Length: 369
Ligand SMILES: NC(=O)c1ccc[n+]([C@@H]2O[C@H](COP(=O)([O-])OP(=O)(O)OC[C@H]3O[C@@H](n4cnc5c(N)ncnc54)[C@H](O)[C@@H]3O)[C@@H](O)[C@H]2O)c1
Image 1 (cartoon, rainbow, N blue to C red):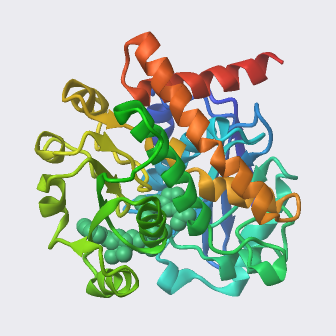
Image 2: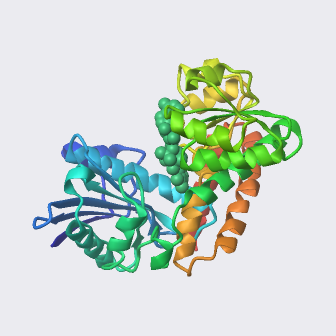
Image 3: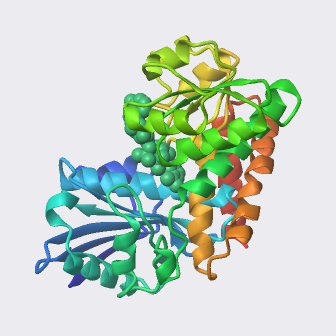
C-alpha cells in the first residue's frame, strides 16, 4: 500500500486537469487529499479532508463508478467541503471530509478491498472519521472497522448506531417547524398541506412526524411499494402520480426527499408551496436557484442544515452511541434554522447564503482559536 498526500495545495499557472481546476476554484482550500491504491484488491480511493479546524474531518465513503478518476477526485473535493459546512452548523466538533472508492460496488466490493480501505483510513491516525454514503452500507462499515477505529455507521452489534434515517427525518421535521414559525408565526405544521417527494427511508419517518403534528400529507414516489407502505400505515395520506404533479398541487410546504437537483429552472416557477424543507442532498440544481426561490417569496430551509440528523447520529457513535443524547442535538436544528432565517433577513440574502456565512464564521473562529 502506498499513500500520496497533497497537503496545502496551491495554484500554479501551468498545471493541467483536476488539480488545476481545484487550485483555481472557489471550492479550493482543502487541507489534505490522499490518493490510495491497493493493487491486490483493486482498490482506488480518494480521501479528501477539507478542514480539520473544528476537529477530525467527518464524512461518509461513497463507492461509485465514476466516468473518470478526475471526476472522482472532484466529487471528493466538493463533498468534503460540503461536510465542513454541514458539520459546522450541526454544532459538531468535526471538520469536513469525504472519501470516494472508484468503481462499481456491485463488481468490485469485497471484504479484502474494504479491509485495505480501512488500513488507509487508519493511516491518517484519526484526522479522518468515515461513515456510510451512497454505495456503502452498515455491513461494510463493520468490515472497515476491523482495520480502523475511526469508523462510524456501524451496526448496533458492533457498537454503532445503525440506520441514520430516523434522526435525519426528525431533524428535517425540526427544520420544517422552524420554517412554519417564520412563515406563519407558529412552530407547527397543524392544518398545513405538506407534499413529500420520495417516501423511502427518511421520507416515511418524516410523514409519521407530520401526521402526528396534524398536517395534511400528500406523497409521491417512483416505487409503488413505498407509497403503499405509507398509505397502509396512514390511510389519511393521499398520493399523486409524480413529483411534477406534487409541486403543482396546492401545497403549503414542499419536502424533497428523493434525489438532488429538485429545485431547478423548471420546478421553482411551478411551485405552489410557500416553504421548501426536505431531506434530499444538493437540492439547488445550480447557483442562483436560491435567489429565484427568494424572489418568488418561497422560504427555503437549506438542505445541509436540516438533514444533519444523520451526521449528528454517526458523530455520537464515537462517544458510545446514546440515542437520547443524539436526538437532543438533532432537536437544535430548530434553533439553527431560526438563526439562519434571522441572519438572512438581517443581511438581505437568501437563507442558503446566510447558512454558508454562519458556517464559514464558525470555521474561521475555530481557525483563529
Ligand atoms: N438516510 C439518511 O440518513 C440521509 C441523511 C442525509 C441526507 N439524506 C438524503 O435524503 C434523501 C433520501 O434518502 P433516503 O435514505 O430516504 O433514500 P431512499 O433511497 O431510502 O429513499 C428515496 C426514495 O425516493 C424515491 N425516488 C427516487 N426517485 C424519485 C423521483 N424521481 N420521484 C419520486 N420519488 C423518487 C425512491 O423510490 C425512494 O423511495 C437522499 O437525497 C439522501 O442523500 C439521507
